[in-house]
Amino acid sequence: MTTELHVREFAWRDVERIFKIATGAFQQDFEILGSEKETFKRGLAPYRIGKWIQKITRNEYFKFYVGEIHGKVVAVILVIRGAHYWYITTLMVDEKYRRRGYGREILTFVCTTICSGGGERLILHVPEDNTAARTLYQSLGFQPFEKLINYWRTSEQANVDLPKGYCLTLIDVHDPRALEITDKCRSPHSFTIFGKTELPPWHRRMLERIFQTGIAEKYALTTGGNWVGICNFKAPLEKKGAAMIYLHMLPEHRGKGLEEALLSWGLTRACNLGLPRVAVQAKQEHTQLTRACEAFNFIQIEVLEGMFKNCANEDRK
Image (cartoon, rainbow, N blue to C red; front, top):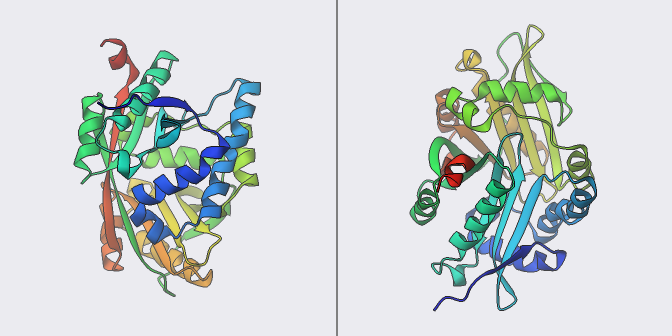
């Protein structure tokens, strides 16, 4: 007989257990990205303080829960609020406690909490080859809507220039104009799922700046004075990790050599920072970027399937 899971809010004393569960659940990610324990803990610090800020401001932007069995944390779930949805960034179960229904139990708890609290929708991304997880999500009413592809390769000095007339300009990481561009870069169907992106609350932005775990830069891709794309570059403080690149480009500017130039820029930037690897995430429909990744000998890590669940459907059950 399976022992019932006790779900409660995350507390700072849980960090060591969460790190241990994460390294087992996302071993490949830790190997490629090179995240260390202290960096991992620093990344959780905003939630330690944010929990109290949320209570004071009554402006909730995340829910962070752990599931216990006999006082031992065996499951973790973190969801972040967007403008019209809640995004499940993490759902993991200790490998010794899997296939006992604990993932379903903590996920059901969160879905019920969010939907009964007035939430519109939940969104997540899951590895396409994780059949067990996808089956779980589908059984709880989640439906597929998009696919993302993750790549990686070693960094190096590269020399592909931007096409004539295009520039890359450093901007503030929370520049609202960037949100408008990234929304326009989504497929029409994905945009209907996510809705219009809004800036996170001021206290979340403040905590992100205070507890930065590395370099976090945002660049505007411009031509003729107009913004036509956004490039996010993230890099850890540790020199053994990987830089992360996220490219968003308006459809009419794709396939003009921009993908190759921006990958070249990212490889060089990472190399100059002393980072051994670069990881890139591409939307499946951005075929010009996936082809550029293949041309630059990036290795495909995984395909992530985006899934969503409408709370209105939950209410009708």
